[in-house]
Image (cartoon, rainbow over all chains, first blue to last red; front, side, top):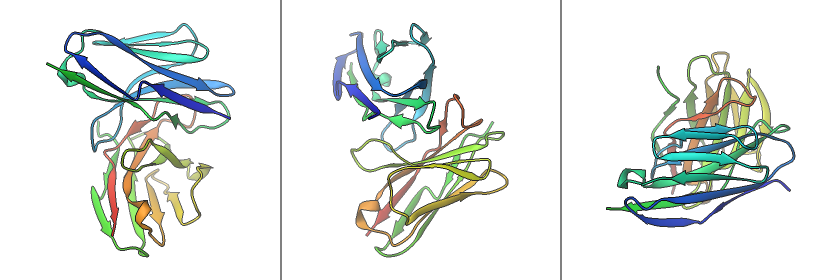
Length: 110
Length: 113
C-alpha cells in the first residue's frame, strides 16, 4: 500500500539550531516528491519538487534531498519566521493526485 | 499574476444542508485538486479535475461531488452536511495533471453546526 510518513511529528528548535525533517515513502513508481510549508489556517505554500534520487534543491535556509525511499528537508540556522508545519507529498505515476504526509510542526524560538 | 482564489473564505451551515465551494485556478492551469483538512489532521485527497473531466476521486462518500467548468474553475458540493464535515477545504491547481507542482489557495473554512 502506498504510504507517506513524516517524522518527527513536532520539532522545537532554538534560533540558529540546524535540524532535519524526514519524509519516507512507499509508492509504486514515483513521479515527484513535493515539499510545502503551511502556516495555521492558511493554504500550503509550495517549496520544492524533487524528481529523482540524488537530486537536491535549496531555497534560503532550506535544502531538500531525495533518495529512493526518503526525502530530507534540512533547515540551516533557522529563524523564528521558519516556524510552520512542513508537509511532504508524493505523486505516483498512476495517480495524478498528491498524497500528503501528516506533516512536521516546527517551532523556532528566539 | 493572481494565485488560486477560493470563495467564500468562511461558510457556516446547518447539519443536513448543502454547501457549495468555489475555486478559480491560476491562469493557464487546467488541473484542479480538492483536499479536506480537518482540525489537527493531514490533507485528505477529495477530487481531481483536468480539462473538465473528473480524473480521480478520494475515499469520500458520494455526497461529496464537484465539477470543472470550461474556464477551468471548479465547484465542490457537499450534500447532507454532517458535523464531521467541518474542515478547511483547500483547492490547488497545476498546469496539467502530470509531474508538475500544485499551488494552493487559502481555503474555505466550513463549519457545520
